Image 1 (cartoon, rainbow, N blue to C red):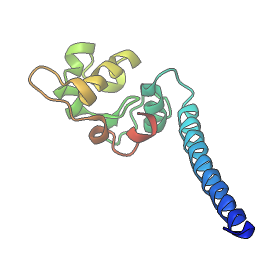
Image 2 (tube, helix red, strand yellow):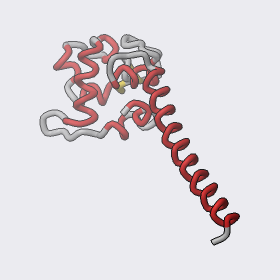
Image 3 (cartoon, rainbow, N blue to C red):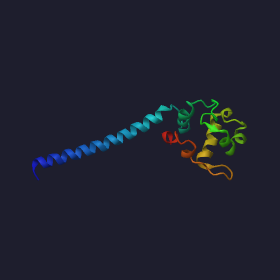
Image 4 (cartoon, helix red, strand yellow):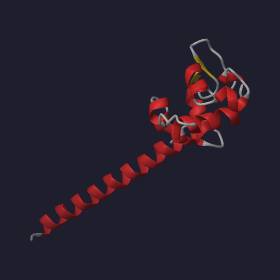
Length: 129
């Protein structure tokens, strides 16, 4: 193998390594910036950042309520009024909303299976979980 061929092979190896390293760093940076953007203590705070700008008691009149933007039917289906004592999701505390969100995403309630977080929050789930 000639000296020129070895130099080209070495340069190609370095270029591939730099590309892979750059992709890994970019992946970490994008994950970090998304997670850091919410300025909250939990992933649910992150979701609330994207769903309602951290406004846990918001009712904008669009048919979705609270920090995690529950529809009233979902809130009722997973026992929100029974657990929190509030018929409307936006009147429940942050903690109560998160408890019902966990039922929606992972655990279900009584004989009702979970929807899955990606199904319940399709446009924002991937940013936080």
